[in-house]
Image (cartoon, rainbow, N blue to C red; front, side, top):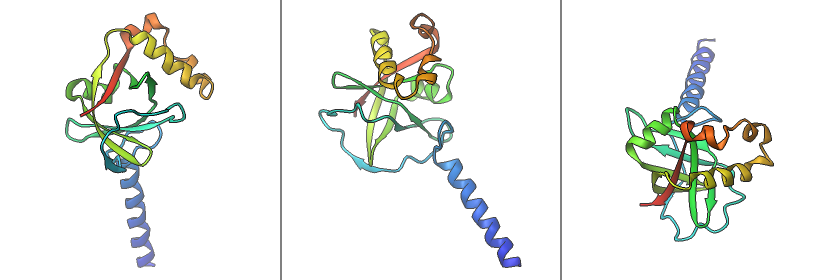
Length: 156
């Protein structure tokens, strides 16, 4: 019986550590995984890529989030709430790792201050059909100016 209690405790501890380390849904983690790769010159067609993992370095621990990504021309963009912890870290540190599929790329995220409205519209257009309740809950373009941050991802 003691062996069973110890094994159960160890299993519970391992599950708790995994949940804390790996991002699950809207809960950030610290592990990104994937195979370190060099970013391509062209991303090709990314319309079928619905989620990426983004590892933002800074603070005591990095933060890995699962987020949406949109491609406008050949550039990749992400969108986040200005009051989000990972967005604050991104503004401060800029360097990230992006996992798309099995590959992880060293990237830089820079805030977009011009024509961000077009990127936000494309972002919403991409996800509206699959996630209408979420996209319809987004702020209007006018409200987004104070609440949303748009970042361009470029290879290091």
